[in-house]
Image (cartoon, rainbow, N blue to C red; front, side):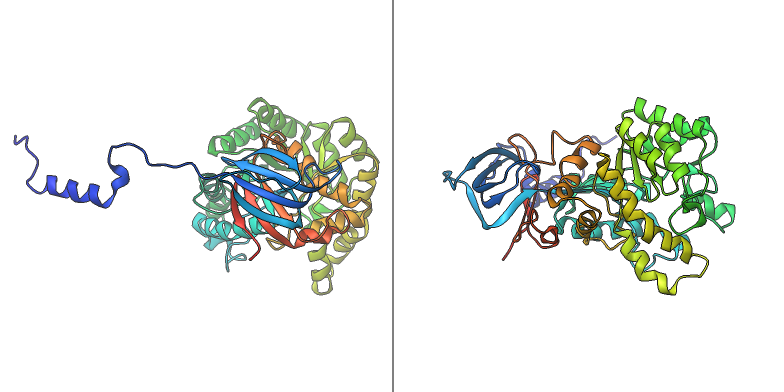
Length: 436
């Protein structure tokens, strides 16, 4: 056998190395980027604590190195002038669906591929980041789309917020999260193996989502707001032993459990079974509020969906209108009652059901139900970071934490509408949006 390479190989390798010098072996010429110095006119470093007028934030290697009062000079630093702005931590949305709707095909699920969802997610992630949300929790998307999207964002290949993802919803067969009206062969493709029946099968479904890459487990103990299973008095769609099994295995494997729940029975069942958060919670009552407090669970209200309900109500099917009226009439008061009772509330919008990039509209709802502007801001910073287990990384601006920093021209502690007008976005020390 001829042990010598073909005559063309040495010349080919020489040309390849010349075209791609990064592959050549040699001393590294990598230079550390200069530190960034932000001059903030008003600084809300920790929502709930006093603001600082005229402050300097030094960012190095993607983290906050120091915060000082006054406008200081740091030799060699790139200085960003936000002296006319209010500077605050990057916002956190705990309830989004980045891959929904698929671009132009949202009503044709049988025609969609994971690529369709992933491409939609790329667009929606940038819209979300531009709106000032530097961290999100995605609680229900195609697993083959959301996990690669999450990882691409993490590696800087796609612009978007930091993502914690659940992947597919774990739900009972025939319940919310299952699909209806399709032959079994198509249904199996659309749902996969995330539906479950009985505690043993539900343990399998949770472990499968974790194997796919889930950071959190999302379940559904009631129907959706658009079907009868989401009524106030509808029975729960999962059994207690199923939810208990889900919570047990998820917690053993280091994941929290978020429960989609509208009706009171499903909310109470989920809380008694040990879930970490209730998503939506439109019909929380006094029993549910007491459980939220005693179990130290978090409520993620998604009140923004009421804007969509109000818009669709005039043309809705008459049989659906009573349920839609119930949400509009009861949900704000119920969420307000939970807040006044001391329930911890974390910010969530259901973006994907509402338009991506409009997330900050949720703050207006929180003020309507009785929160002060600072309490509303806390839901999307300190409270949300606590729920996501990221309170050592994000949620406040403090030395050592990730440089997730945004700015607005207005004062959100006076009017939360200012958070709809973000002029600067930095995530992990990289500037993604700045005023011209």
